[in-house]
Image: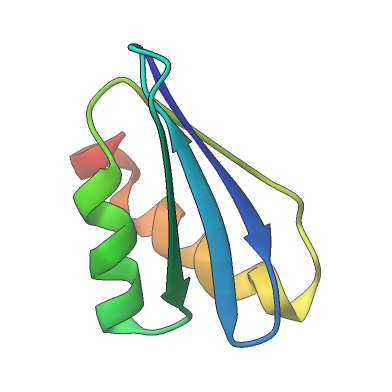
Length: 73
């Protein structure tokens, strides 16, 4: 199982992927289409995504993940 922890901030998110091999990869992505494509490139079928809902800052991320639930999760 892969785990992605996301620190949601205004405009840009900071994320860390911990792979099943215990490898850590950090990356940043913005709250827009190209940013979500970056996030999507790290998501595999067995990925768990963890983030704190921070009101308006996490709303776009939440909506994106819900829209992709059937295709990436």
